[in-house]
Image (cartoon, rainbow, N blue to C red; front, side):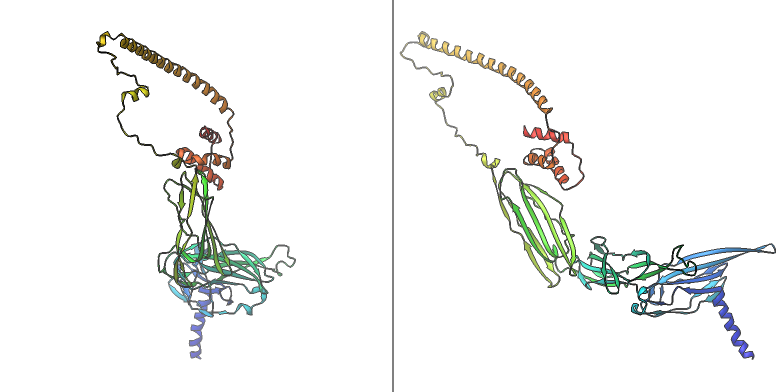
Length: 519
């Protein structure tokens, strides 16, 4: 009898410790793979210390949340304060696991919770209305740096489910470039609805990476018949959390320095190939194929005495048949007043499937420019410096100073010579006076013309168009791009307006610039 008491009393004591001082509660003991189990540890006392936890078995836990409540009692004038403290956390098992006994220190005494088994069952074993699942898939396990791949997050919602609220928490992608936030796709299946999120990821560096699991929190409506038999006051909401399984991926270094990773074709088109001076030649470069083109550096052209403009590259990437298909295009404009050649564009491609590298090239385009100012200007002819005889000078308009004596008489006695010399002097004086008069007349005419031109210009300025469309303005200013920095800057702004960018252009100044260019 004493032996029985010796065995029973400690057992009752331990049971008391489990049931009163420190307790453990779980929201469910049977879950499907990835479904969360919420654990709550509770203790009462003045000073409470919970265990430090990071995992339950092999499964990491969410950061614990601590809450506490205080109550006070007064007895015989003495106030006693009691603290109740709770620690709550969630973990996501994918196979059977037992929550081990955990130690909680209350007012210097160590208490232990009871071990709690958790059973994990296939979702197919649950009623159809409870078969919620969250999975994550990769289309491959090894990729190269810069090679895009597809990651899918799939949430299975059973038929006739009553989800009132849902909060999707996507995985984090440290070390990867993400094209964009994916749009949710819905797929109907015999089991229910598949909510699919497609991510296109591009690794930035080599190494072994773990992509954390996504998570979804569900608020499921359940009719509480006991409290609300007529459904007048709404439904209760039962919260459930699901988490996928983390995925491992190996990123390999590229075997060579390349421009493209995948399988692509490249093409270029230019037109017209014969153009008037200072008229634009349109050039379009296109790259299409399997792989990613988001990080392709735009090819540039540096041609002597050729002005080059370009739009922003347009990239369209989509998932087709489980493959990443990309289309890249960029438009250029070339302007020159002489013949030039648009060179070939050459890119190096690495094919991850075959492990081979090859070169892709476009063909060059020779452009013939008609009415070229440089071609139309002949080189200046060189004139040899030869001696000019007096008769030649006279023929050229220079005064003749030579005199041929008709007889042997003295020059002072030659009256005919002096008569001719006087006539020449009078002619020179008349020419000088005429020149001065012509100069003064030119000044007067210039002043009058300037005033008339100002009046004409002022009158015309009043009739200047104040509004030009971007196409009209470009058609007028394009050929004069190289005439001044102001025209070049205006042409660039007009192109930005055509691309849909918000650029402020003063219509009055634009009209004045066009009129100055026309004049």
